[in-house]
Image 1 (cartoon, helix red, strand yellow):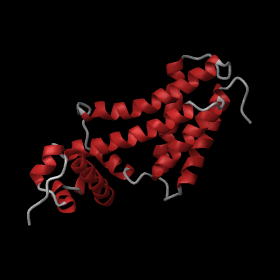
Image 2 (image 1 turned 90 degrees about the horizontal axis):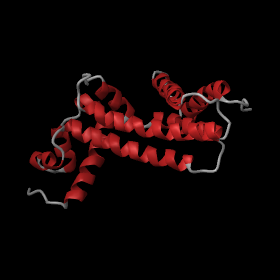
Image 3 (image 1 turned 90 degrees about the vertical axis):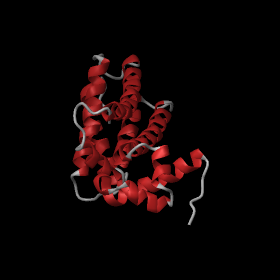
Image 4 (image 1 turned 120 degrees about the horizontal axis):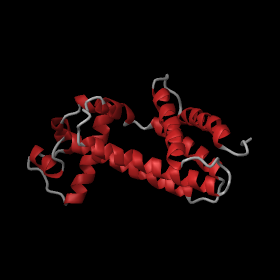
Length: 202
């Protein structure tokens, strides 16, 4: 049976959608381009025309996910809420993200990387988006006299480490709901806020 040719963007969308399902089902290591050929009904040559290998494909999925999260963080940052509440809202988003079906595949993928891997630059871009959003809220809090006047990079590192650490711990726990993961992240940030707030939140 001849395989139909699709416009480039439509083909990429189809490939990415099927690739996401494949990574969720099989994980990073066991998913193959042959599997993807079967799912998409495209030739291997066509797949490699759009994505040169499985790693590039997976990183593209991560970049898409990061962009979606970035838009949510920026949206929260633009709301007229207190800096403390904005951080709690971000913690809630981090926690809900523990439900992402791609996270197990991401953990598996991360174990395959060496410190010299070019993929670290891509992963850094993904984490930088969250770090930038957090930094903006913290600076707003300092400017408003809500947070202690500490070095902004030190504060941002502390908040980011707390959220990332909460996520790592949540992923080792028995399966919880998204709201339960979110609640644990929010509690962690509430504790941190007691240390950086000039007037402790209720």
